Image 1 (cartoon, rainbow, N blue to C red):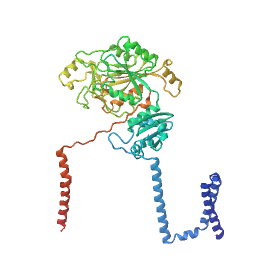
Image 2: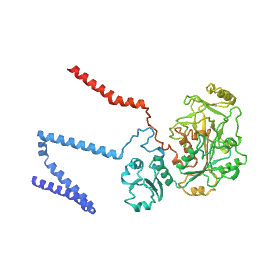
Image 3: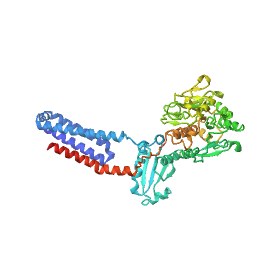
Image 4: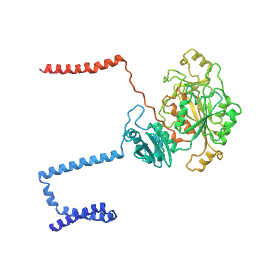
Length: 534
């Protein structure tokens, strides 16, 4: 019987070996190989079961027990190592400890990558020794999306490929998506993500800035200019231009959005119906930034502009917000901080924003039951001052902190809303060509009229655009108005300047300290220890 079982065990081993060889050399016979492997395994197990007494007897020996324990320990350690490596390849986690997260992608880049539903290729054309400086950045794009493919090509070795993609210089990155390509010559996240935005959203949006009423100028690089905003719009694939409505008497058909940025005077009487017709008949988008009066002794009102906003559920009050929460040294510079009111513009928005000299903008129910919704508000220790005489007296004395809220006299208690948005679904078919195309596209957002108002325009000027969240708030509002919610996020940050400037005396002190003083202290401690032991 033992001889029969021994023979069957060798047959089982032969069947398992044959199954393994068949898997490699004859994949067409995988089904038969699987059956052979199971049959061989059963024969081997039968042999082991028939020899259980001999096996149990072997375990009574000391060497066998120690060998078994050692073998089991090795198997357990190998199993742990295999499990750790398996989990690390699928559940890896990275930590970026730099202040501005320079080695991890921004929320905007991650959000774009998560929305990609087709392969995206990043093709780097450079000399082979330089490839490593791109891998750190592009590996992050691969880490956040399985659709991302990265390829490195040396144009000197593969000139045909370089000619195909029209490469003119080393260090060019080509972003390719669904037949569309964009080229960048810088591997910063801002440039690469900008190219990704353009291939994902090839249709350029047009933004018109109303002019002729003292509005902010996108072409000005002065402190009060909007040139920084112009650069931010270009990065999100927007084109922009000025619009003098008093001359054109119409809003161009390619207008995605109309911006009124800090007018110094009120709208003309004939401009109001043009803007209203653009909003109602063409599902237009309007972004108004309206400052409070800067002359408290003779406050100027804008009844036409504020009246237009009231029809859309937005009350731009005649007031100045006073913030005594201690976040700034100037009481008339309110600061907004998380958590913001719930709205698509500020959802998950964790950055501080600053608004020098802002007015309260309140939501209300306007014409045809159009209701606004606040998306930025100040701290609880703030209020909207409506008594301009008292405000003028306090500021002229150089101490606006002596002001006190008087709600019984018209002041608005804090927290004060300073930004309101309204959205109304279109009740008429779109007239513009682009809107008509979007209406036919089932995946395109449904046309809506959207209006957003912020009670300050200086927050987006060049002098305040560096405040942590000001740029993102402006661009998030623009993208919400343009119904490009996928671009609503926090954008890449510039690296912080961490250079340390030392004077000549400090450099000399550091030199002598590191070369002479510290070694002398260590040597003296060693000599002292030796002497005591002696």
